[in-house]
Length: 447
Length: 99
Picture (cartoon, each protein chain N blue to C red):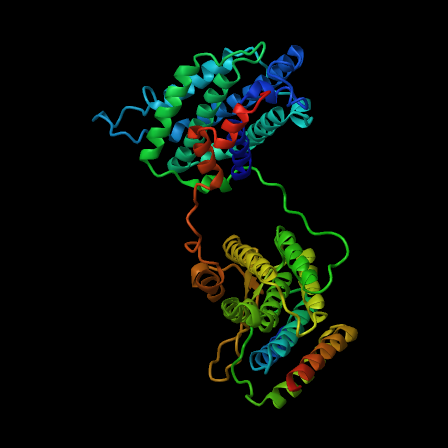
């Protein structure tokens, strides 16, 4: 997820920006030694490694710029131009930043950090911060390339652009600070890179970046919680989580009814526990149980043997079995209740999708009513040719209406995404001045 | 399935559904729902739609009629053991309902 990899980069760079008197820091464990006493070769070696890490970060910045390029528009008022001409980034701050980053990348003699360099911890604090920042950059490549490029919105692109600009500015500041490192190679045209990064940051600040981009990118696969059932209510939570994971496969109509039944009973039976801790959740779960009861009724006239879902149905049975073993007076922590609510939202969304898609695609079929025997008509009764028929207009089906109107969690309730602490921290680190403790340190004898 | 078999099955499903809708507790309603699902499983989920018209409002009558209709399925070739299992589920659900 970009939120995690981006935060890792920003946090480590902010920490590096707050480190001063770098040559002594590069001296490793001999920090108390006088200036310049660390062996030259050792510092040169550290410098070489740091440049590899820096090259990895620049490479990510450049790749991210390439990804956001198609949906990047300047926030500065543009001159009236022909709208039928294709949009180009030429002349904008973002275009110049991209060019400066590409220049720095291609004119550096340092290679990208190898997997070994990225994975081997160092005793030196400075190098270790650089290593983590480079790891963040390497991981972010998963998040800001590929599929994201197709789904990225312009405000989300602005958020990434702002991040790249801040990171580029941090690299320029650090580049100057490390100039006394033996064998150090400055960023090519670092002044241009710094100014274009500043211009881009200003341009981004005129718009409204969308930080939901933090939620995009690669995520590890959600796996079932294996092992023996956890004791008490945690066992129920474990089974509910596993049910959600197993719902990845499409269930048959009968298994779907079993799953719906398990959710109805679970919501209903959790209400007394929630009432003691969080009455708002208790009320929500009461409503959820009623919704599932209605869906259960409406699913009786739907059938279909396509799909599987045995695993999910079994986990539903586990949920109910383990819930029976919970002592009635048990106090459930708010954290566990919130965990249930999160899982409920996911399960509801998944079931809503399964029902809507099932009806739409014909895996859920409508049962046919039998013709009634009426004595007053003299017509023959035709035997049934089909027992299950596809639904002609899914939106007319009561279960689809219930799912849309009652089951699906509201999407507008989410809090607006915020820039997060790491962005503010990096900006603060970019403009910070050494604190009094640093000043005192500088004045101490022997430093 | 023969038309008469389908008719008996539809009747049995409708009676059990009516019992589920009028159950006193969520647990009992869920118990009747399990009977319904089991009936569908026995018939390969090819059951006809419910027809709730003309059903009694007396729960005792509904239960007795549901029991006899399910037993009647044996005449249409449904395995006797399956029928006993469905009846056992129905008894469990009724027990939850009255207690």
